[in-house]
Amino acid sequence: MDIKELNKTLEFAIEQGAQQVRITYSKSVMNLIGILNGEVDKTAHALDRSLQLQLYVDGRFGTFSSNRLEEKELEAFIRNAIDTVRMLEPDSCRSLPEPGRIVKDATTGLELGLYDTSYEDLTSARRKEMALRSSFWSRKKELEKGFTVIAEEGEYSDSLFDSITIDSQGLFARHIESSFEIGYEATVEDANGNHYSNFWWDAAPFLKDLKLDSCARTACLRAASAISPVGIDSCRTNLIVDSECAGKLVTPLLNALGGFAVQQKNSFLADKLGKKVFPENLNIIDLPRVPGQTGCRMFDSEGVATRDLPIIENGVVKIFFINTYIGHKMGFEPTIEDATRVKLMSVGSCRTQEELLQKIGDGILVTGFNGGNSNAATGNFSYGIEGFLIQGGKKVHPVREMLITGDFISLWNSLVATADDARPCMSKLIPTLAFKDVSFSA
Image (cartoon, rainbow, N blue to C red; front, side):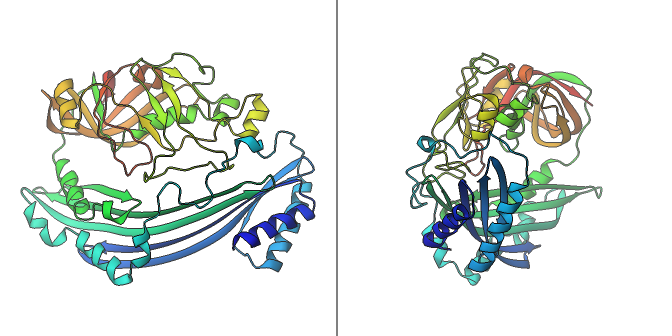
């Protein structure tokens, strides 16, 4: 659909009785090549387009989606959708955002520079060549010292996403983004026939930044590093969390600041806005408009303009993420629907994880979480972990089948330092974290 057709669709919905309308039209294309033990195992090509329709009719609200976009079918779909909304209960809190909040500077979709023009030149042959080149299978003997690489499975993919959002108040917002990804899982066997698996991955908006050649090798090394784990007794010691999985400890904080969780009283931070809850050294910010960075957006799903925001500043909770609907229900000024490009600012002078381990000395480095859960209302958590025992700043041996338990407010108040090694391919920029005196149980 082009812009003219989208506007015509919006006008038709108004003519049929909707007082307010928001339309989001999205299209995407994805190509994938799977590699198994050095050979092409599968290929896939997917093309998708869809239209999401949000209707505000006689004080009622409904949201609908369709991928059947021929004019006559779409008109029938809209009529039926409006009839359906009229059967719902009224909800006076539903409305489009105030016009002054909507984005004004996302007219081309290219403002953030997230589209790689080289995507247009990719061919099937080029994709296959890159996928095969990424495999480490033919070179695995370089690493096999005390173990054997018995399986290597990977995927290369690229995609292009384009969305346009318009509404009956004059919103026009577009976002275009290319993405390139590589991911591998490797399985190794030790001298006793025990198997260990691990993974590694990378992603970037630009093909030139994708680390194609090191991903499979890294997966093999991560798998081999877990050989011969040693059990240790329950204890309280320092916790270091690898940047690859550190987001596991940040996401519950962000969820607790979500307007819906606060409104439903399902947040351990529901009464903490403006209060100093965390240590002075904890600063988490949202940087949604950094050109060329994965996940950045000029606007949220309501079309509200994003901007740089402090989330937690010197330990003080600075914001709840409140959309228009929740704002009306709670009597709060709406902010933004969600954080977009979260960054936890580094604490201390350590640049790398190795430097951080030397500073902390002894503890347990967590490289992965295995199950467990957290309570959104209380902030209590219990997570299974795997990783390494650290003594004198060095990895001594792998550990697994242990639990860390506690509550998030106490945990974050024990933050002592971080590295400066956040992975740019991840949606949240979280470095390796170090906490003191955390409870581990065998």
